[in-house]
Length: 168
Image (cartoon, rainbow, N blue to C red; front, side):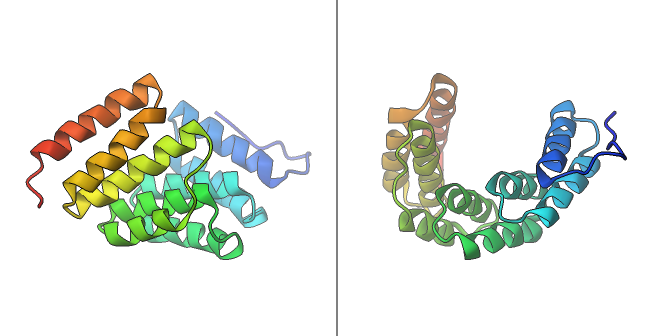
């Protein structure tokens, strides 16, 4: 059980850490969301706070709230690759694959292998959801080029699913 010390002035980072600790313990996600929201209200310009809060909101099905948090950040930081890919992931999950693809294609392919894997994976998902299997497979293959073993196994399963998918 976590509690906030009453005699210490807290910063947004402190609330972020409290929220992360609660999420890690899988105890009370409403309390975690509350701490993440406090961190966001104190510092909506901090990308890590934005990503954690939007992720928790989306996980709970609060897609409009998650979208608002990400859009607010992107209004001040247009083209931020991590937030752009996160909002594209949200759009893929809510049936807006065309918009997700448009956003992903508007940013540069990330330099880091991990970010590149995530970029191409979500591009592949958006193409797959639109029924463009070959483009999806090409994006998934690019994701595999930089994926670690765990992600590679997952992506291979997605490729197999895409092959058997009836969307045309």
